[in-house]
Length: 556
Image 1 (cartoon, rainbow, N blue to C red):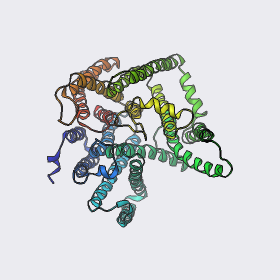
Image 2: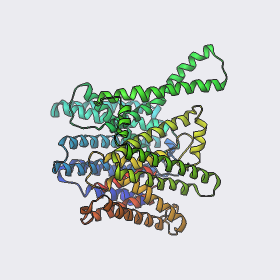
Image 3: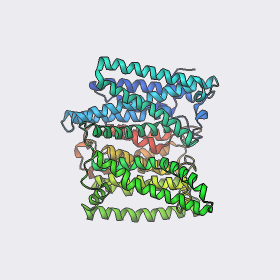
Image 4: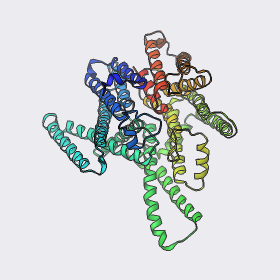
């Protein structure tokens, strides 16, 4: 096999360029993290080359999404690079005494946790690939058991040495990081088995690492409250509400599954009702559980970890009505524009020959018209609105998948009008990726951001750049980046130019005049160019990766 650097394709080259750009902005105090990110990138590159090898692709073993490469390199470096970029940004703030040192230490711990997750998953993929070449079923073999025992021995030795030389505090940190890695491996296996042919390995790695870090932080916060430990990290009411609601809704299908199993076992002894009555009974159970989660379970956790003076849902209503003219007007604007646009797009999808990919880009433009005014004038309210929208999407997707009466079939029919080759009947991810792609940069910037364009990373890259690239490339594109791909040079150039033009309009609106006349314009051009090239070359879900990559580069 040729050396890894000789097997670079367009996507791999752009990803390595992205990592190099972030590493070049590092300071001396972040040398350990920079070294870790460098090793992780090279390791991920080697694993991806091995996984995509024609003689033994891991995609066949895991039944990943057809037509996509493994995406292991991009999936493995995206979150660690984002964390590293945030470390650079927070370090600037600590130097200027704008945030406390606790924020920096907390972010360092999260960087090591997400790096451990990616390293652990990469080692797992190496073991899978090695045993696959020998035609051994890893999951059912004795080798799997021996590998688990070996890992536990290594973890125990590491725990003992860290206890001797670093103290119990270091040992607990190491144990926490190792648990993150093992949890991510289990979650990745569960995701790829539950949703076959829906995601690539890189996409599943991004999702699992993000979930483990996000809810690991939730567990840490809960443990700090239980043991009365002050960690010095300030959490807003809005972030606590969003975290509790999302966690509760993700656990809802698990509770519903087991409750339905018990319900059906009991009902089978005394009832032989019609199928319609059976569906109504299951729906009744679902809505009772949903109400319990939203009104009792999730708010109980919120009140435990944060000192709300009232029920969290009442706090959210009070927050909305604290500035009724601005926020209610914004809500009315959203409802009107969404109802009109969705009805029009649905009609076009059923009665027009417009290609599905172009129709979906109209939703990207809709996101720009919805989110930009709110982000400029009501950023905190937009944080809460994103959480509410994500909760609604999760509830509707659960209703669609479980075919909950009476909305299940209607939701499924409606959502199918906007799906493409990356969606399936098992799960529709496009609307989630668009919403989260716009929301995550804004959520990450809610505590501190000294780069005015960073919160707009998702809106600019997806709502403007990706949309213009698709429309111009589809209509005028002639020169393709590769023989097998559909992306064109004309489309990429249009996407990059449109984002730069939007930035030129946004900066004066944000009153960031000092930013315009400094060297940051060079950083902005580099960030837009790298993210545009990644959109052109990647076969992964661009709605998930491009906003995070663009945000990381804008924070430098």
